[in-house]
Length: 262
Ligand SMILES: Nc1ncnc2c1ncn2[C@@H]1O[C@H](COP(=O)(O)OP(=O)(O)OP(=O)(O)O)[C@@H](O)[C@H]1O
Image 1 (cartoon, rainbow, N blue to C red):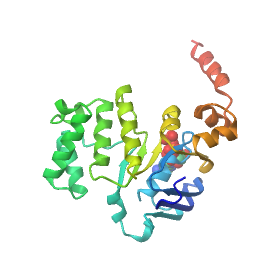
Image 2: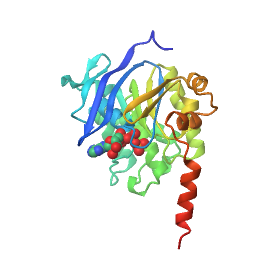
Image 3: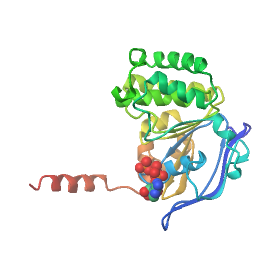
Image 4: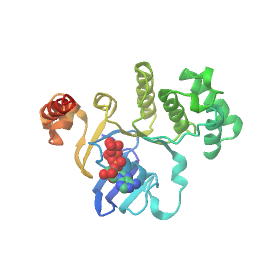
């Protein structure tokens, strides 16, 4: 679909081993500017590992990862200044206020204190957190922390966004806002790599869905294409079918019967 747009990410033969087990078994993937990729798969499939490899956060992979045309193993980390990242589990500095934290992150990305503070304050206001902007992050709820993370990933206006469960903990209204923000960012040419287990959101938000299972890509296409191939109606059903999972009722039944044993 976006084949005329710039090639932003190009992965060839990516393999990664933990201990004596391959968790990525040869990932080949081209991502073009403006795509919203829904990166899905069962627990342990290798989604976070792929994202961390692209961010230069894991070592020891084989194969090649090119971002903005450069091999990321070449020692030049300047590509990172064009990337925003919302990790699955965040290491927020709880003792800082959101104001202090976001100014610090802005500084890391080359913004001055004034620029970072001015931009962060307005983004935080839009997320409805102005009252707690000067409070310590340790006092925040899960969803409030998630909003701070989202703001921190966008302060430097990155060209590519890697989001690992970005809606985690957000209330229904905030989910609608964030989905719309992502759609508008993609329309402006940002590339979004979105990993989530919330299938109905992935279905709606992504223009391309990549299904990873056991460290391999087993499906890659638009929702309409995947639906046509698998002849089922929802992304959840496609996921179940392609990962060969038909045991939900049986597992639930056994689970409940064990719970009732006492
Ligand atoms: N630091 C590590 N050391 C050893 N094994 C790891 C490490 N990180 C991940 N793994 C293993 O690699 C595999 C892939 O993990 P990964 O976190 O990439 O999966 P995921 O698809 O993101 O899963 P989830 O949906 O549960 O977040 C899992 O079997 C996991 O146990």
